[in-house]
Image (cartoon, rainbow, N blue to C red):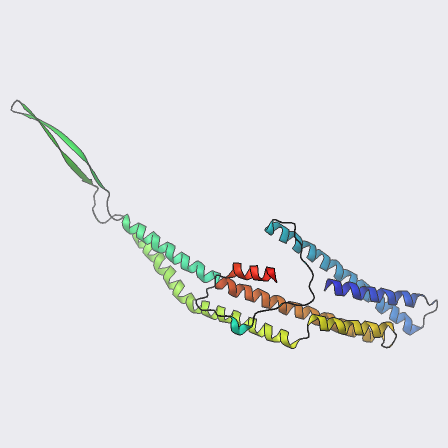
Length: 272
């Protein structure tokens, strides 16, 4: 979009120079000049925003990668895997995985609370000295010591741990269906985005249409209003296509994450 806006800005600036060469403009030409001035301003504002977004993305990329890398421009689109090739057996959303870990953690806490129910048993050497009837008797043996009460310690801790574990398991069971629905929704979204992209002209074809409009405009074969209308429609379509590509890519990566294949998916996209 940045390169497209720059190219269009150059066309409008050339047209403005051409109009200003006339010392006396007709009312229609004055309106044309005003329209061109507005288009030049719109393009400069949009280009400024795109430059800021691009610089920000590069800084974020360098920060997380730890390398001096930059985003490259591509006008040929992205080659997405076919939706039919994607399987989602046993796929889990990050939220569902978190509930699974929470259930395991509460189960471990319950086991720990149960272990605290039994008193500590201490075993050690024992020595006793008895005196009586003029004799000293030394007794040696093994002593076992155990705290009382024997089996009713940590009742409150056990009850709390059992309640937390039951709650975690209930949430996990409830969210199993929700997890399946969300995974299928991702697959449906990806499929819809891919099918839509197939019906929309590719970027290279749209650019050819844009260049044809500009050529007719510079040759004086179409009016400024026709040029502006065609130009705006083309830019809107290009941006909508970009949004669908981004939606498809983001959805595909979320599916890969749910399948524990995010790292390999990112490596594949990086090679492409």
